[in-house]
Every structure is written in structure tokens, then in C-alpha cells.
Image 1 (cartoon, one colour):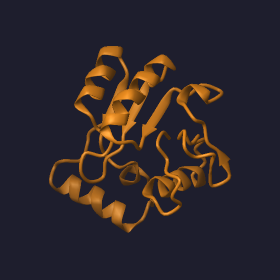
Image 2 (spheres, one colour; image 1 turned 60 degrees about the vertical axis):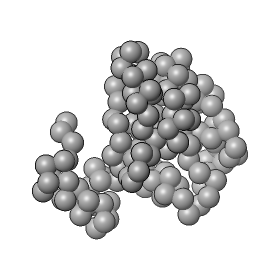
Image 3 (cartoon, one colour; image 1 turned 45 degrees about the vertical axis):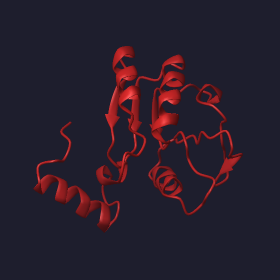
Length: 138
């Protein structure tokens, strides 16, 4: 998870905790944060060992453009650019770069909407997206 915040109240930390509670092996990546909830934080994606094949970006669009280049260098095959409201981590330039490198992307979307029993707000969000025909297909 690239861009997880130093702020324990930030949504990226909530998402980090949720993934860990569900048994996912999540590695926080942020050069300005030494640890997240007791887990050592890597400064760069290339510092993660063993190497990963997927990355969830919780970054601003301008940072996303740099991070996807690091993802390509590290051999990351799948990138999820988080978005709940606004642009989130999504960047047209980053999407274009990923496409040119054959990196599979999810351009936006909140992962919580796809997790079973993630909480009423996330379930309502998914329900509304299905109702209005905007829920992503597999």
C-alpha cells in the first residue's frame, strides 16, 4: 500500500488495518513514515522484500505518475489507483503509462466497496452503484 498516511485517523490507515485484519499481507510504503500500526514502513517499493506483484496507490495524481514508473521497474503486474471522492490517485498519464507497460489497472474505486461485510456505508455505496449501473464489472 503506497502512500499510507502517518495520521492514524486517515482513511488509508483504516484501509490498511482492514486488509491486515482480513489476513492480507500488506506492506506500507511511505518515505516519510517509519512504521504503521507496528509494521515497518518501506521508503520505496523497491525496498519491499520479497518483491510484490500488486500495489494499491493512496497517493495524489502527481505522485501516482512517479510511483507507476517505480512499479514497472519493480515488476509489479497490477496497480489499483484508489479513489473515493474527487480524483483520488487516478492520473490519465499514469494510466497511459501502465497500459504501455502492460500493467493491469483499476482506475479508481474504493476497495472497501468490494470487501464482504465491510460496513454499512460501503455496502450502501456498492448497492447504489449496482442500482445505477455504475458498479465495475469483473
